[in-house]
Image 1: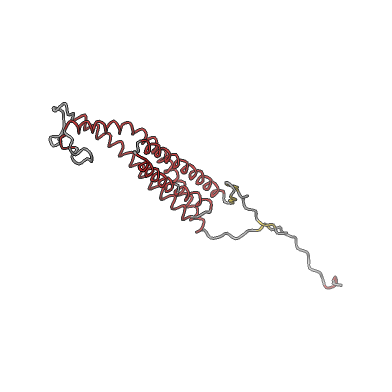
Image 2: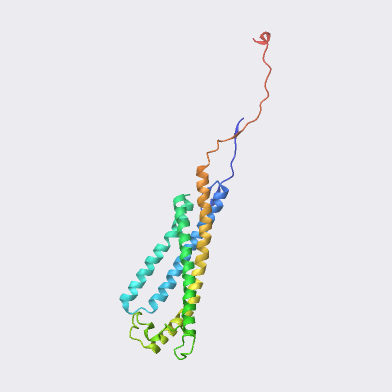
Length: 236
């Protein structure tokens, strides 16, 4: 009697039955990373909302900032949505979007961290070398505090001492905000790198599986011993 070849038993991944063990493992990771990205997006939105509205002047100004943060969170949630539904529906297009957006996001967040650190170090070095009260410092001859703030909005008419005080205040704000920027951006950067790495594996597995020709179903057969043919005198 013929018995069909039994494949590996399907695995339940968050209610989805997946027979391919490799795809099941990648799907679980994709869904976990997408959920984590969604949580980070909401947390970042709440933090930005708190910071931006704390110094808002008037109801209209606070409303505009709240609206911009809400829109930003909504756009940020599109990335984990691509990953979740791409994994759930085994959609290579959504998986490709998930990988590409995470790659671009990690690049932008990396640039933000570098610019924040380099910007603070630049302002700090400028203040150390060009102290307004110490003209004998190693400040470049072309630098003049009396004209350094001429193109900064709200400080066009500052004299040298006022401009120097503005840069000192700017350096303090950058120093205080640097841990916040790095602490909030670095985990997101690491999560985006992991999402890109695992998302690309998921995408490549889907593409390779679709390019592999279907394997015919195999059946396990049992040999049946043959019987000798009857002689003419044995036929009734």
